[in-house]
Image (cartoon, rainbow, N blue to C red; front, side, top):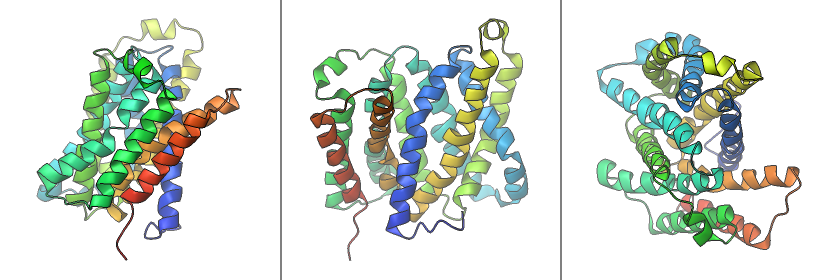
Length: 296
C-alpha cells in the first residue's frame, strides 16, 4: 500500500469511499451465500477463506506478536471480525438489509463512547456534531423518510447487529490506541491468525449435505470466497491503516456512506432515487467531513 498516502486527506476520502463500496456490496454476497449454506457456515467460510489467503503474510510477521500486543490482537480479531461475521449472517436471515444497515450506522457512536470510557479519548465538539449528523443522514437514507415504518420491522434479531457494531467500536479503538506499532496489513493478518483455526474446526465438523443438495452451490461458495477476499482481507488492510492514520471515529463513519452505494445498486437495477435520499446522503457526508475536521 505504499502508493497510497493516507497522510493526505484526499486519499483518506478515496479509501473511505472504496470501503463503503466494498462493504455496501457485502450484503448481496452474504445473501447469495445463504442460498446454499446456513448462516454459521457462511460466516465460518468467510473467516476461514480469509485465514488461508492471509496465511503467507501472518507467517512472515508472526515474530511481531509479543506479550504486549497478543491480547489486543485477539480482541481485534474476535470483536472486529469473528463475532460480527456470525452475528450479521444470523440477523440477515430475519431482518431486512435496510434495517441492518440502519443499525450498522451505530458503529461510530459506539466507537465514540468506548473511546471515551475505556481509552480516555477526548473528541472535539465538532466531531460529536459530525457523529450526530452522519447518523441522522444514514437513517434518513435507508428509511427514505419512512423511519416509523422501518422501526416497526424491528425484532429481537436486530440486537445481533447492535452487538456486532459494538464489536466494531471496540476493534476500532484497539487498533488506534493499542496496536500502533503494527501496520494495517500486519494487524489484519495477525488478527485473522487468532480466529482462523476455530472457524476451520467448525467447518470440519459441519454437515454439508443440505448445502450441496441446493442448485448452484459451487457458485454460491464462490460468492463467499469473493466476500472473504474483498469484504474482509483487502478492505481490512485499508480500514486498519485508515484508523491509525486518522481516527477511530472517521474510519467507522464509513457506515454512514455504505447506504449510498446500496442506493446506487438500486439505480443500476432501475430504481428511482428520491429527494429525501439525496438530502440524507448530503447530510451524512457533511457529518463525516466534520468528524475528520482538524484544527489548523
